[in-house]
Image 1: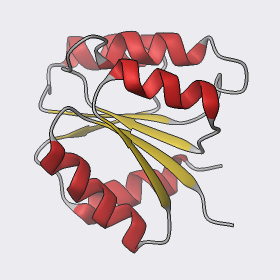
Image 2 (image 1 turned 180 degrees about the vertical axis):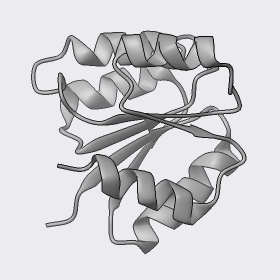
Image 3 (image 1 turned 135 degrees about the vertical axis):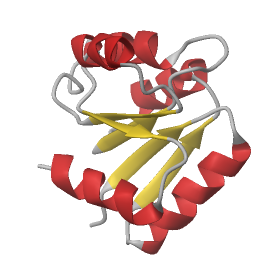
Length: 121
């Protein structure tokens, strides 16, 4: 059974690139365009990894991580931030919220796959 990954980004192009990269490596991919849509999906389905943007409308990546960590079954699921933010203070904020990893955009497909493989139990 393939591992299921939720990708969240308000950019359709980024979601498409992630989907192509991850599904090409054998992962099942679900997409959300913002944190609010992602939360609805997380409450209905179980994911093995979540990859989220930081700056999104309605619910940003940090708040999304905090909310997901409160959901039973998601306390230890790997959550990777994928963002243009590279400031150390923001990385610390993400880590404090519960982020398992951080990838700076623009990203390479092999870089995403390496981080996903590293955080999967």
